Image 1: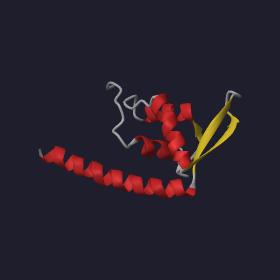
Image 2 (image 1 turned 30 degrees about the vertical axis):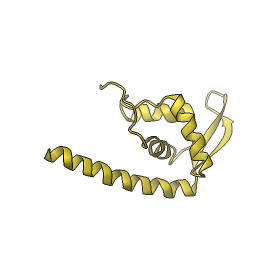
Image 3 (image 1 turned 90 degrees about the vertical axis):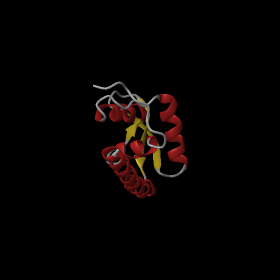
Image 4 (image 1 turned 135 degrees about the horizontal axis):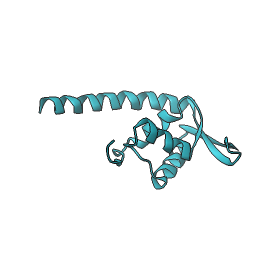
Length: 109
């Protein structure tokens, strides 16, 4: 298992949108899911997560609503909007182009 890594600038929004694509989640669950799926390589700090959630909500890509969690505690759950789904598709395509190009350089160099 590698050491936790800071996220590449600009990827946090993409990771958040992908994480809530199929099921609404609260902030802590979003951060935990990113960490789990990345095998503990990516860790999202609260100081980065909550400003990103605020920004995404302001842009209309996610919507937040208050609800009880599985523990009975009230938390703000975030879900993807239709505008967010369209933005996610564009961002995934852009990421695939970029990561493919980087991979080509790494393989050739």
